[in-house]
Length: 151
Image (cartoon, rainbow, N blue to C red; front, side, top):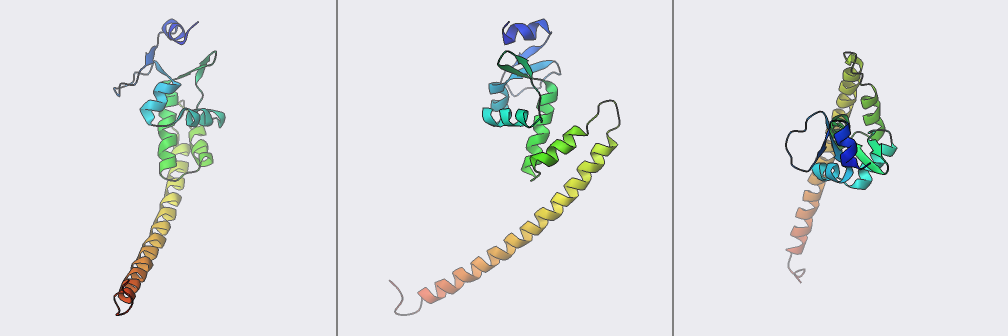
């Protein structure tokens, strides 16, 4: 059975790369999902290997659900703000649709605060480095402007 036939039998639509809203019952093939999110097929397979997403299978064809798409958005957001994949997985694994998810939200808030502190510290270090580079450039420029050093 083809991926299209599998999807039709399940009452779902194969998602194409159209940037429109995605209904809950649609699935995407790996290439379509990669294109929509601007990531590689290898990255999607890697996230699957790490247990972060779990696409349906029809033979070797991967079909990504609305849930996989939502998880992928969170994975990419987590990576963008500097979370490790382990941290992202910890947060995602706390999700339970039958509960309030207060634990997941508290853990996310704690990890986010820690990451913010880390990023602020890094920004301060970068600002200091930029200041030192500017001083060095100024000193070197002054030395080059001295008579006899122009070359």
